Every structure is written in structure tokens, then in C-alpha cells.
Image 1 (cartoon, rainbow, N blue to C red):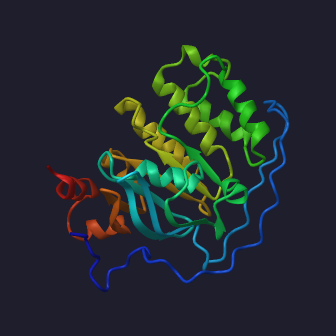
Image 2: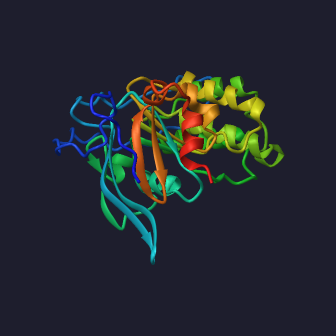
Amino acid sequence: MALRIPEGKEAVVSEFPPPQPAPAAPEAPQPAPAFAPDAPQPTPTFAPLPSSVPVLWCQNLTKTYGSAVALDRLTISVPAGRIVGLLGPNGSGKTTLLKMIAGVSHPTAGEVRVAGLPIGPQSKALVSYLPERPYFSRSMRVREMLAYFADFYSDFDGALAHEMLGRLGVDPAAACSTLSKGTVEKVQLTLVMARHAALYLLDEPIGGVDPAARDYILSTIIHAYRPQSTIILSTHLVRDVESVLDDFILLRYGQMLLHAPVAYVREKGTTLDAFFREEFRC
């Protein structure tokens, strides 16, 4: 049975809003020169959205694989300036949802818009996506990965990337083949958060690191976060991320159970972690 927020509770709007005119299409990003640490770097950013245009909205979003339903008629609206936890057990549809927002997977039915734009080159230019699995060649060096992003994304902030790597204790000259799995994930998180994007999609950003590093990584995310942007952070480690979240979305078997502020569960005298465990206990 789906959960419902009682009337009178302040909650993030989860119903699909009336369609709004999309903002003027941003100019196509131009390739930037390869990053040189001593050279000044441009840091373009997207124009602030009108309050009537959510950063993300989906209507009846559905994804099936044969007879298996990965996501079932999800309808949701997420405004700018929020850090949102996408929560649910394995197989609940979290990764499927993020892939469709990022445009690397296509819905079977329904619609997705980012900043009022349908999924396509213009929306993808506003999204910075961290997939669950590493995707760079182990033969590359960290600085080569930075240069790759600087060439590909005009909104990549090389100075910020170097600052974040310093906070995480990563040597830009290091070869990826010499780095641990957790350190590779730190580097990829740095690349994603060093962009000036409208929407950040982070799929299990702390799942592959040791507990001692999780708080440090979360603080790095917050340090790089810009208030006009929105972060959607998928995880099953609710206790670790609860303190940085504004809102949460609960998914189960591809369906949305609840989309609400974290304050909603705190008003009940509990924590989001306890609320999650109670809802999904076996």
C-alpha cells in the first residue's frame, strides 16, 4: 500500500505540474581546450530557472524489459535548490530512473523533462551524471581524465576539480591502474561535481568507499554544491546521507511510495534511517 502525506503537511510537490513553456534553449556547449592547471578556466553556468519550471519532472514514466517492470508510471516534480535522496532496496528502479533522466536509457512510456527541456542534447548539457560503475580506462592518469572532461564539457571547472582532488588526497599524476576502487570512485565524483550543471545524478557515490571516507566525500559534495542546482543521490546507506538531504524519494518494485522533505519523518519523532528500515524490513 502506497504511503500518503497527511493533508496540511509541507511536502515537495510530487504531482505533475501543468506544462510550462520551456526556457530558451541554451547554446550548444563548445569544446574547451585541454586543461592546464596554471591557465585561467572559464566557468560558465546555466541561467536560473523560473520558479514555475522544475529542474526535473516526469509523468507516468515507465520502463519495462520484456515482462519485467523496472519503473512503473512514476510521476514526480523536483524544484531547483534541493538535495534529494533516492532511496529503495536493490531492484527498486533507482538506477533505471537515473539512466533515463541522463538520457542513456529510453523510457518505454511516459515523459521526462530537465529544466523544461525534453531529453536530448540540450538537456544532457545540463546534467552531470555519475554512474554506479567506473567507466574510465585503467590505463589513464588522473590528469588525463581531467583533460578529457575539460575538452568535452564547456562548464567543467578545472580549478575546482584540482581543489576537490586535494581535499580527497588524490594525486593528479597518479595512474588509475595504481588506485584502489574507492579512490577511482573519488576521482569520478570529482569530475562530475566540478561541472556547473543544473542537475547532478549520483548513483551510489559512497557505496564503494570505506566508512571513514564517506563523511569526507559527502562534505566534498556539499562543498561543490551550488544552491541553484539540484542533486539526486541514489543510495541504500541512508544513515550516512541523512544529514545532507533536504528531501527523499522512496521507491519499491519500480513504484514511488513517497516523496517528502526529511522534516516529514522528523516530525514523527524518528529518523529517516529508522523510517526506511521499518518500511523495507523483511
